[in-house]
Image 1: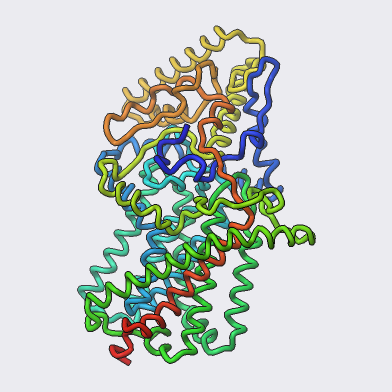
Image 2 (image 1 turned 60 degrees about the vertical axis):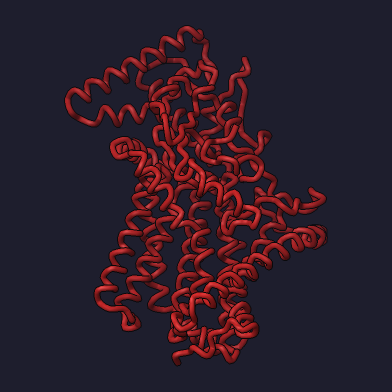
Amino acid sequence: MCPPDHGSGCGSELPGPPPASAIPTREGENGVVDAGLKSLHHYKRALPTWRYALRQRLLPLVRWETPYLAYLQSKMRTPALDSYFAITANLGTHTFFMVGLPILFWCGFSSFGKGLVHILAMGVFFTGFLKDMVSLPRPLSPPLQRITMSGSAALEYGFPSTHSANAVSVAVYAILILRSEANVFSPATTIALEGLAYFYTLSIIFGRLYCGMHGFLDVLVGSLMGAAISLVEFHYAPSFERCVNSSTYVAPLIIALVIIALVRVHPEPADDCPCFDDSVAFAGVMIGVECGTWHLAHTRWDALYNGPAASFDLSALGWPLAVARVVVGVLMIFAWRELMKPTLLQFLPHLFRIIEKSGMSLPRRFFVPASEYKDVPLHVRDDNVLPNVSDFPKMMRSIRGPGRGRSVSIGPQSAADAYETLAYRERKRRESVGSDGVGIGIGVGVRGKASLGGLREKAAQDDSEADHAGNCSAASGVHNGRLAEFEVMMGRGTAAVGNGESGMLSVEAAGEPELYEGQKDELSEKEMFSMLVKPRVRYDVEVVTKLVVYTGIGWLAVDLILIAFEMVGLGAAHLSVR
C-alpha cells in the first residue's frame, strides 16, 4: 500500500524504509510485536554517540511544536489555501531552480545565475548534510495532515527545511543586488521587486508550516542558513571568482577535489533518506559551473558571458532567437544525460568490482556494492532533481488534470515517521504507566497478562477522559483542550486492539473526512512498516554516475552550450554592450 502523497510515482521507484529484514522488530510470546523497546533505541544503535545525543536534545522541540502546528493548520485550512501552498511549494524545489538556472546564463544574466548556483548548491548540500547528521523526523502525522504535490519530500528528514533555505537565500541575494550599485532598475521597479522577494519568501516558509511538512525549528534554522549563505556569496564570491578565473587549471581542480571530499564525508543517515542524492547532484553542478566558467574565462567570449559586468542586450536579440537558444540548450542538456547515464551505469559496475577486490571500496549504508549485483536497470528512477524525458507526459497530464494542486495524507510515510511515532507512543505509555501505578504495559507490544477485554475497557476509559477534557476546555473558551486532543492523536501507546485498517487515512481535495475518525486503534509496528513505501534497490555506482552527469550539466550550461550558440548562428557576440 502506498501513501496517498505518492500517487502513481510510488512503489519501487522511490526510496523508502529499510527492507522488512532490516526493520528492527521483536515478537513476544504470542507473536505480538514489542514495538516500544526496539523502536525507541533504533537511532541509538544507528547513530554515533555524539549525533544521537544532539538528536535527543532537539527531538523534544519537534514533539512540543507538533500540537501547535496542528492547531494552526486546523484554524486556517481551506481548499483554496491548500491548492495555493501545495502549488507554490514547487517554486522552492530543486527541480524548479535546475530548470530555470541555465536559462539565466543563456539570456545574458550570467553573474546573477552563477550567484544563484552557488547559494542553492550550498543550501541544498549543507541542509542535506544536517538532515542526515541529526536524522530528526518531520512533525508527526497525525495530528498534522501533509499537503504536497511531491512524492519524495516526505521521505526526507525535517530538520532543517531546504525549501526555506532556498527561498531565503534567493530573496536575500536578490535584495542585496537590488540595493547595490549594480542595480539598473528604476526606484519603482526596485521597490516592486523587493516586495516580490519578501512575498515569495514568506509564502514558501509559511507554506511549509501550513502544509504540515515542517515545524518552526525547521524553517527557522533553514532560513538562517539561507541568509548566511547569501551574505557570504554577495560579499566574498566576486573577488574569489576573479582569483580563480585568472589562475591556472589548478584552481578549479582544487575546488573540485574539495567538493568531492565534502561528498565523501557526508554523514550516513540512520534511515534510507534521499537527502544525499540531492547533495551529490548539486555538488556536481557546482564542480561543473566552476570548471566551465574558468574555461570560458580563457576564451574569446569571456567579456560577453563571464564576469560581473558581462551582459548583452536581450531585447535586441529578439524573441525567436532567444526561444531558439533556450530550446537548443535544454535539448543538449537532456541529450547529455540520456547518453551518459546509461553508459556510466553499464561501465562503472565493472570498475567498482575491481576497486572492491583491491580493498578500496567505499560503500554507503543503503547502497548495494557492485559485487552483489550483476547489472543496473537502465531506467531506474534515481533522481528527484531534474525530471527525465519520460516524465514530461505525466507532468503535463497532472497539470491539466482535475487532481492538480494537492494530495493530502495522514499517517507515517517514511521510516523516520514510523520510528518517531512508535518511540513517542512508548514514551507516553511509560509516562502513563508510571503515573497510574499500573503494573502492566498497555501499548503497541502488549506483553502483560491483561485480557483483551481489559485493554478495550482501558482504551475506552482513556478516550472518554480525553473527550471530556476537550469538551470542558472548549466550553471555557481555552484552546488547551484542542491541543490536548492533538497530543492524543500523536499516540498514547494504548490498546492496539484494532485490525489497523484505519490507522492511515487518505483524503483527497473533495469530501475530506474528519481527521479524528479511525484514530482510536493504533497500528502495531509491523502493520505500520508494511504500509510505507517499499525501498528500491540503490546501487553504489549511482553516486559517481550522478556526480559525473550533473558536473556535465553545469559545465554545458555555463560554457560549452554558449560556445555552441556562437558556432551555429545563435550567438550574441554582435550584441555585446561592452
